[in-house]
Image (cartoon, rainbow, N blue to C red; front, side):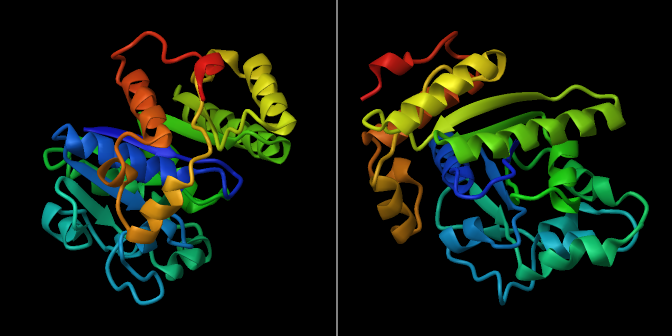
Length: 266
């Protein structure tokens, strides 16, 4: 089971879009996917038709389980979706209080890791949609993942969020004496604007070693897909946005050495 966390310490950069798009493509390959909504705002849960304000099962309950995690009680917190091979561990707004509630409780940073270990035979991929701030939820997501995906909107304010995210990542790696690979994903790219082109140049200069060598373009079809509550790959598989995510997925899976060059994106 591979676990990917999708994180950035800035909102609005495409974390949920990246999560649902990759999950849709993986599911169409026959891969069993579990989506984990680790953001108290619950955008991913809402996308898939669940209300974080009334949700009574999900990630929040996992943090309050007493004793050892067992497969059956972890599975009770998971919801099926309308899409084959995609399940959801939903968010609830109560998660916003987790940092205060957990306090100094021992092992709080590994709760998600222990829970997902029970599901290792049930899923091929777990994708975790992270909150935009450092706290117990992001710490858990970074502790459990095999790969960190960092969507970054190609505008200069988003670059500061990336800077904070990389700093956080290095702090956690140092404290745990582990190495976690990460991939920076330029999103919402609009080649018509000087701001987008300039931000991409900065990413290429400063993060070349960890930068996916292509971009996710601005595509209004993502809004249509969210309105319908379905992955864009199932709604409009040939739209430019989902074609870009297909390139990204191939890159992450090591199927190609390099994806379509930025200069050729339209």
